[in-house]
Image 1 (cartoon, rainbow, N blue to C red):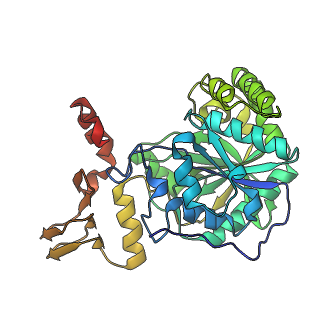
Image 2: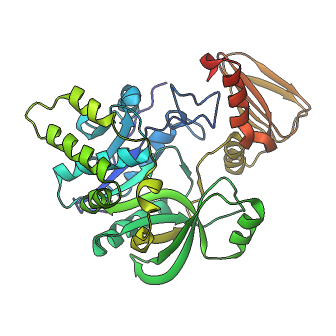
Image 3: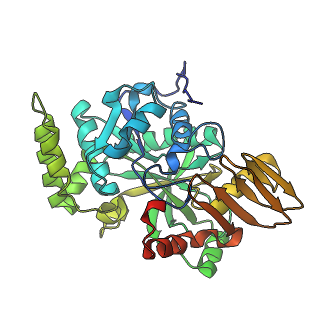
Length: 379
């Protein structure tokens, strides 16, 4: 059944210089076989009736008017994004001719929105996360916008108070506490930390100074492009050439695609944030969002178990006798289970995944084996 979003009737932020961009171009396979290159997880309804993309859009409408919300995605996903967010005009979809990772994507976003509004302040938000405390998300986002408006040449990020030792996420180490922003604590970032091993993650949990890094960023569009000029001059040259083409009366999409294809595929964190000396320009707002990046099937099970207060999570045509703590996603045929414990079963039209829950993070190794055997049609 096609899902439709509803237009909000009231909004708390009026500042027309504020914009949010849903980053919806990712093609991850961490929730394979449901999530595929052709239809990644942001386009699926994993934890409710709406897709992750639609849920993210609705959260942003708590803060901004629809006219201030944009979507960045790859050309291959354009039709699906427009279908799922049908209330947005096509002018608010920023279509990357080809996927080149987050650095070119964010540079392209900043270029296009700055052409609309020289005073634009942008937040970039992943479209494939789950947030079970949308009120806190809205409050933290307002605080991030305000902090950005008061601190030129700074990037504000929203960090997540960790709930457990997590080896699959990066962390933010907080430094000096600063003046509050809209009722939220604000800290200088000391450093960004790569995914730790378990003993290190356990130490982080004991210290209040470490946050999960959700990669939610807020910045002035003009500052962002200045950072590209300083740290990535070649990317900035390409962005300037794309801007020149966009200012023509009849921009040539073929020319823009040719320029975009010349970008190196690089993450924004590596291209800009991790450059020497940049961290002094980064502030962080700690938040309790009840957040998950839905990084594997075990995390889906955990989210739904908490929501429904049940260890057996079933979707689709299924009959069970005596199983415990399982996640079952059936497709169009009956899935019958008997006496299973801590197992994940995901059935799709062409593939059925059966996995131990505690091995869910090792899905990549399984996909590598499928690739080694030349079974590319199933990826």
